[in-house]
Each structure stands twice: as C-alpha cells, then as structure tokens.
Image 1 (cartoon, rainbow, N blue to C red):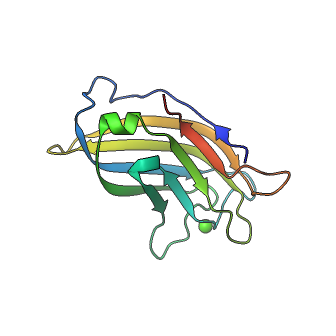
Image 2 (image 1 turned 90 degrees about the vertical axis):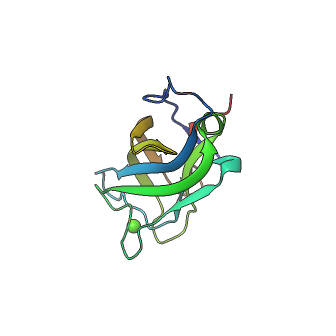
Length: 147
Ligand SMILES: [Ca+2]
C-alpha cells in the first residue's frame, strides 16, 4: 500500500526531557471542505508498540466535511517513547464512501503532575486518504518516521 508521508517538526516539547511521563495525548483533527471530504470509515492513530487509538465520538457522526473535533486518550508512555515511535493516521476503508480528505491534525500532550498542555506536532494540508483499491491505494498517512 502506498502511504502518504507528511512529516513535521516537533514543536513546544523540543526543550523537554524525554523522561517525562505523558499522561494523555489530545488529537485535534479537521476534515477538509472539498466535496466528499468526509468519511464514515473507522479512523485511527497507530502509535506502533504504544498502541492504536480509534477516534470516535459516541453518538456523533465524526469526520464530516469541514468538521474539527478533539479526541483525548490517557497514556502511560514517555516523551522519548513518543519521539521514537512511528505515527500513522489512517482509516480502515469501511463504509459506503471511505475516502477522507484530512485538512490538519494537531497532537498535544499533557504530562503527569501538570495541567499544562503542549503542542507536540502540527500537520497541515494532509490531503486525501482514499480507498484501498486502484487507483486510490492510500488509506494511511505516515506522520512521524522512526529514526
Ligand atoms: Ca462520518
């Protein structure tokens, strides 16, 4: 499968020690305004060994055209572990029209013992995560590569 590669720099956390324990990650995801940008497929953030987080608001129709929603998950890994993990945003190609145009994604983190929230990375204009069939074999965006 062809993957869309959208790498961006670490932002507000660059000066922080990797030993700091992350208590939660907060994902803000915007769907584009293009025609048919929305999806009903199951959307996930794959964090490799750290886990896979499925993004769903109970009782809501997520990832519709022009939507921005936030998803928070409790975690028990460190900043260094996050830095060393491949991050992929994708969908499972399910539903009637799974193609999804992603506008932007923000990943914030909070740390144990603190109420502050830090922007880890911000990906802009990600583009189409279409169907897993020719000519559209691209359901996953690689957001952070493993060094
Ligand atoms: Ca939807």
